[in-house]
Length: 195
Image (cartoon, rainbow, N blue to C red; front, side, top):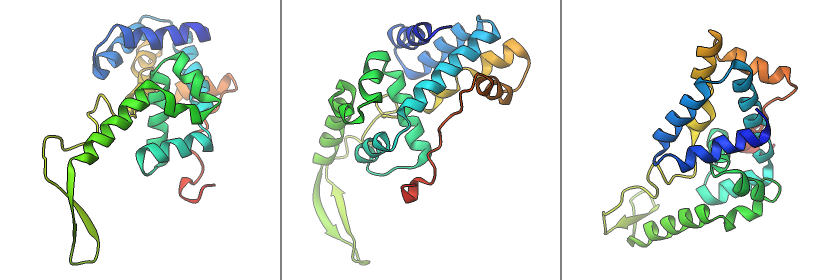
């Protein structure tokens, strides 16, 4: 599988499914019929793409969007960016500031704004901290599972197909990717200290 085949599979999975669960199943099904070498190719291209998204500038975008930032959460954010497809990912990979212009990010920000507008009253607690009291209870979370700008499971779709194709555990998949000279940059070193 070449890079074009990798991105075609990512994009078709979005076009031919409606939910994230369906998308994961679609990808696993397509990968399961491929020989082990092509599953390794897919995982290698995935790792290369993820490495392009793994930068301190992209981490700053993630932190600003999410309001905090764990290394795992950042990795899942980059997986979400990859899941948006080649054009969107290529737009932001080398210029993380362009992430704000993605329609999907604009949608996420609008959801956040509308969620926060539901808060109407600020109160002070006995411990001296303020709390926002929500007067409207129509939505308990900012994003639904489908809207959340994180897609952890997208990074695992090769595991079961590889296991079926080779009879080996997923550790050997990582070894096969490293054999091609591709090492994952995740997690960022000590995100709490800014490296």
